[in-house]
Amino acid sequence: RDEFEKRCSEAAEDAADRDLANLRDRFAKRIDSAKSQISKADRRVRELQADVEARRQQELVSGVGDLLGSLIGGRSRSGAVRRAASRRSQTQRTAADLESALARLSEEERELAELEAELADAVEKVVDEWSAHAGTIEEVEIPLERSDVKVSELRLVWVPTARPSAAASDEVGLPDTE
Image (cartoon, rainbow, N blue to C red):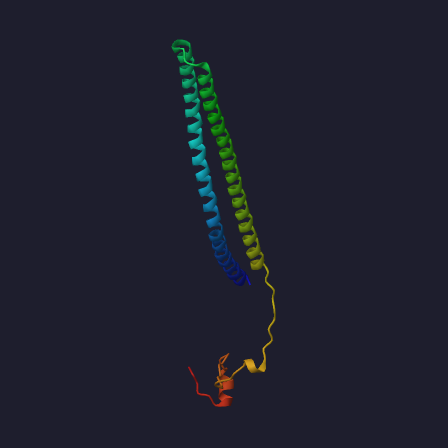
């Protein structure tokens, strides 16, 4: 029985390994897609962070330049204010895009975590299922039927179990073996 339980356990492990390989293949495509989406979202966040920083610096430098130009050069203040407002609104739009990209990155990372948790649950379920199958051994007695027996040759074999004593061998007429 111990050997049979061992063979059942090995067969269950093999079946579980096949099921797990199929499961991982099925999830691999989805996980790769999620990782690709995260990579794209991360790249977009980095681009927008650089863009926001550049716009803030440009806004600051241009604002200082417009202020000095209007004070020293006598340029129109309304034009300088209009340009500063335009640059400020562009910076704010880019910052809003950055916030949106950060939210998307966070969402993609959450989806990947959920997918990995779903895979872990599915793996655990497969392992538990096959472990239960391996442990479920039911003894069944199979009676022998007449049609299960086939006699191909019949022979008579005599196997002596004890050496006859000298008195018994004289009575039967056996030769002396000593």
